[in-house]
Amino acid sequence: MSSYSNIPWEIYKLSEKCKQNTTIEPSLYQVHEVKRGLRDLDGKGVVTGLTEISTIISSKNENGESVPCDGELYYRGININDLVLGFEKDNRFGFEETVYLLLFGELPTENELLEFADMLNGFRTLPRNFVRDVVMKASNADIMNSLSKSVLTLYSYDKEANDISIPNVLRQCLQLIANFPLLSVYAYHSYRHFSKGKSLYIHRPSASLSTAENILRMLRPDKSFTELEAKILDLALVLHAEHGGGNNSTFTTHVVTSSGTDTYSSMAASLCSLKGPKHGGANIKVTQMFDDIKKNVSDWNDDDEIRDYLMKLLNKEAFDKSGLIYGMGHAVYSLSDPRSEILKAHVGLLSEEKNRTKEFALYTKIAELAPEVIAVKRKIYKGVSPNIDFYSGFVYSMLDLPEELYTPIFAIARVAGWSAHRIEELINANKIIRPAYKAVSEKKIYIPLANR
Image (cartoon, rainbow, N blue to C red; front, side):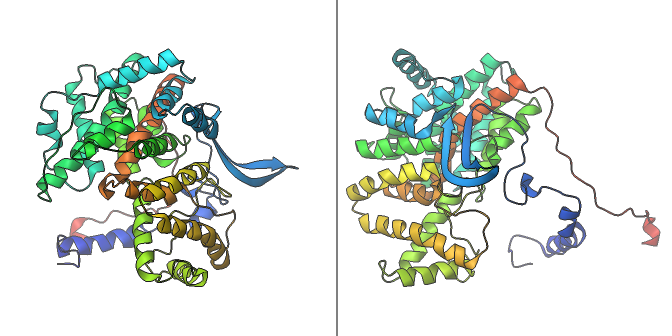
């Protein structure tokens, strides 16, 4: 047996053949001008499509040159800052309005928003015995996999599952947007009960509450939460709801949708993409990294001690020895991530309510020092700044959300963006997405079995 106790030695040996005969010489990617990861050498994504759902700006043209600028994010042409300020000024929740904007391309009137919220609440119901027969079967700590299982199983309950007409797809998307919170929270409670021996709570959502409020209501044994808790969770949902067509899971939505498959399969594929630690699972890594920092940095006010630890992270000497400072940097943004800036402005209030202001100060300090340390250690082609994962994990921790739900919360929000992109792909595209791969293998002569 190998060091991986559940892998037979024979398979371990065969895996070595995989490595030996499947490793491609890195220089060939440059020889054939392959855009690895669909990115240019400067990190910019290769254009593979058009979208009206959202716009990301990280640089501006000055005198014919691309110059980094503070990041900007637009949902359907509306600046995310203006959207947030709009619903915060009215002291109301914003996620439902954001979903409406992403799906239909315009802001709802007051009556339209009320009707839309009522529609989502009407869809917040699962098939009879679905929780018992599906959600609670084979429960495990990976709630994203449980969520994917539930989504695929819902296909069997839909008489029009394969109908990809826009009205039917919209109906399916709205039902999934409404039910992702139920499927996620119930899957967690099932895991908590069957795997950890804790009490089982299955609270039904309330039609009078927002998506964020219902998440907290269903999650907590006593169904209680403060207004600030719900408002900040709502803000996190708004900021995670969409981020351009080029992110991994949304591109997956476009690719899978282009094949003509059903909505449930498309959403399950996007979920599988999002669960990866390089995508939706990054905020968990941030919180785990900070737990390690708090253990190993004795004085949280000592800049030199913090810098020393950050350098150890980059040198693969601390935490998970990956060489990464999690939560720092983004594939697109350089000077700033607008989502991180918005979230940071609210984290301080929550840290005061939760008596965790010292931790918030540590986050702020590392946000200042990490770019300096990275610039000393590595040659970078663009600026480095905190991304939304840097603060979102801390927010979820202060909300007492279990780590198992960090990425599912991301999915609860992002299903709105996936839905908008699925509909956009169905309306505008008529070809299956098929990128090209250059074959670099050598031709070989077949040798009869007896002669090998």
